[in-house]
Length: 162
Image (cartoon, rainbow, N blue to C red):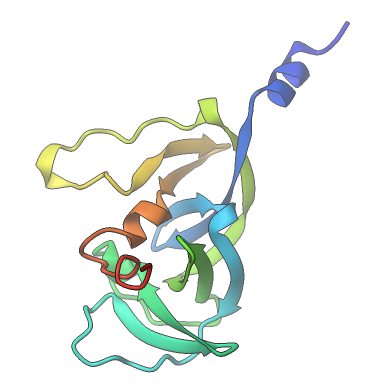
């Protein structure tokens, strides 16, 4: 006789996510968008750019914009320390870096474990959220990083794809 719990887990499709922290919250993004994880280095500021764009770095000859997700998500500003990292993403054939407080781990979530984000009406925009998931005692906020980076207010992806 097979353990029904075991067969249930193996048959349900899963998706892997990289988890990271911003303040006291834990977020997750699709691992397939992650190219690499680097320590935070000084960036070159760009004049007249939005506050959430920290600047750019030269990554092996490619100029990569660096986005501070704390600022983008209207979270309190934190001082960068030894745990602060930049997640280098490949989104819609464009390389972008996002600054986060720390990276936690990679987890596999069954599609059934992902719940839709709650509706907050017009007070809070949830269009960049894939959903929420609970792993052990942790609540993860799943970010649709492709939708976020291609949004009109970010203006990062649509200008160079032609």
